[in-house]
Every structure is written in structure tokens, then in C-alpha cells.
Image (cartoon, rainbow, N blue to C red; front, top):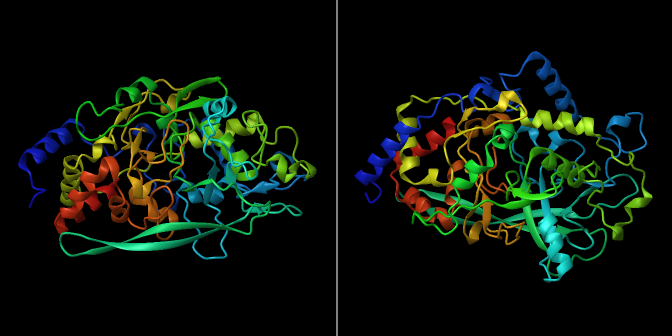
Length: 461
């Protein structure tokens, strides 16, 4: 078969020997927990005192926020417009979200980003530099489909799917579904006619502090925007605005690497998802046209610095579960195929973290399978919505660690890719295009046995 090229497999074997993947992908932070709570454990190397800090952060991550005024004044101020009332509602058991299943469902763990194209004016260029997008004038940067009593939700998200089949070399037909987004029941008038939409499910929370601890210089070494080595892969870092540092830095978090660090990522989620203000985001996503000032709030800063510290600590120290079945012959063969396909050109297997404010995260050999860079994934995955320097066809490479636990944590079928369109790992692979088109075509050309081994490797992570 075309795919069976001896020189490729030889190169893959040498690469495998050079970076043999350990059972502990999160280094000393790795947990041996399995099952539904595999993503919810603290870093194993945390001290007893730091585990208490982790538990405090977990309580603010898990428990719902309420409308103001309330006797629960540490967690009041929800809304007036929001998508959910608790972080855990989106990141179910600290795992990935999913698109709405039925017509009457709130999106909950899937949100819809909104923006409009720039008009090129100096004011909008400055906004792009700091915010990365130009928000929709009335509805802001995110559609919020829930509201406190007395306020109107912004609208309702409805997803339909167009399907098409991909036929593999062995005759297997795989159905892929393309989401079709409709926003109905608009609460504040018509959307801008040029509104850009991007559906995003919540990503898993594991290992985020380790990704934050990778030195920026190490990330930038991986950039190859002009594909100077001719491998067809041209990853580049997103450059985003760090609010606290008042400077442009490398983005790491979010589906397009639009946030520089976990504190800002969390603050942005509090503001956009729950309508809660903080020192980094003193205003929520409500616009003047929506008149949100007439509703009660929880004070000038609804998320105090102390609460933000706790939630950030929690999100930094969720452990990555240990790999399974490393010595299974099919898994080992699948790993060689993964390398031979060139998948590691984006899904970089290993890193060593640098110095971090948390000793538990510092100087760890980790295996996240990501380069944290932007890659052109082709027109079929494009949302056509730029974000900072990311184009409408580019996405940050998602980490693969913990993939084998996704369905266990979800308690049902897991969903993959930025909008949850893929219901299986094979579907996710078959949606790849752009820089990954050649690898995808090789997967289509594989034998049944080879493809099963590749999936077995991914499920071992």
C-alpha cells in the first residue's frame, strides 16, 4: 500500500526511541485516578497546605453564583446576562463541553463568539491590538442565552447538521456532520449584517498550569510561518494583549490562543460567561444598548482578587491522568504510525517546563502533544473569524493528553474539535485539512488494522 514506506517507518522508529513517552504525561503532577473523576484531581506533587488551596479554588469553580443582592455575598452578582452560573457547568467534571443536544436545550457548555470585520479606522485598529476583535455593536463579543429575572436573554442558539460521508480505503463509510448555526429570539434587535460567528465548546482543564509553565522562547523556536523546512507545516504563535503587563505577548489558551495566561483566561470567562466583573475585566459583556446598568450587581469587583487567586490556582493544578496500555503492541504500532504521518509536526509530544511561580509545575518533563501554535486547518474547519493574529482558518493545536478518558469523564459520548462536531476520534481526524491534509489522506488510505492501531494509540493518551 502507498502508506507503507519503509524509510518513513524507520524515521518514525528513531523518533520514537528519541522521545519515548512515559506513563506520566504530567511529570510529577500526574494522577493515577481513572473513571469519571480522572480530570478532577490535584497535582500529585502538591503539599498538604497547597491541596487545601486547591480545594478552596475548587469550591468557587464548582458552586453556582447567584443574583445580587444575596446573603451569599462572596458569590453574588451573576449576570444580568450570562451563559451559565458556574464554571463546572461548562467544564463538566473539568472536562470538555458539548453542543446542545435538543432544540430546547440551552447551549450551556458551548458558547458563540460574535464580532464584525474591521472598518480599518485608527480607533478600530487600536481596539484590535488590545482586544483582538471588534465586538458586535449591540450584542458584544459573546451571545448570552440566559438572563436574571427581569432581563431578556440575548437570543437562543440552535444547531442543525448537514452530513456527508467519507469512504475509507477498506470501504468503511464514516458520516461527518457540519454544524449549521442559527440564532433565534433575539432580545435586543437585529444583529449587524456582517456579524461573524464562532461556536466553541469548553475545552478540558487538565494540565493547564504545565502549559503555562513552558518558556515562551521554547515555544517560539517551533514557529515556521514560511514553512522553511518544507514539511508543509507552518505554525506560528498568536500575539495577544496581556492586560496586567500592558504588553503584547504570546497567546496560549483558548481555541485560537487568544489569552496569554490562566488568570486572564479565567477573568475573561467570568465576565463573558457569567457577567461577573474583576480587576482585569471591570465590565462584563453587556453593552450600553442593553441597559444592564438598571439591574443590581454584586459590587464594583464581583470576583475579588482573592477569589481569582483561588480559581487560578485550581485551574493551574488539575492533574493529567496517567497513560494506559503503553506496552500494548497495537498502541506501540499506532504510535509509530502517528509519528510517520507527521502528526507530531503540530502535536509536539514533549516539553520541559521552565521556572513557574508554583514549584509543583516547574522543570517537569511533560507529554501534552501540542505546540500551542496556530495552524491553518483548511476551509471545512474554518470559522472565518479572526482573533488577534489568528486568521479565520487557523486554530491552536489542542493538547491530546487525557484523550483516552474523555468518554469516561463525560459519562457518555465525548465531543471533539472546537465546536464539538466530531463524535469520535476518527471523525476528528477526518475533519483535518490545510496543513494536515496530507496526514488525513494517509489515514484514509490506511488498512483497517493500521487505522485501529492509530486510534488505540490516541486512546492510550
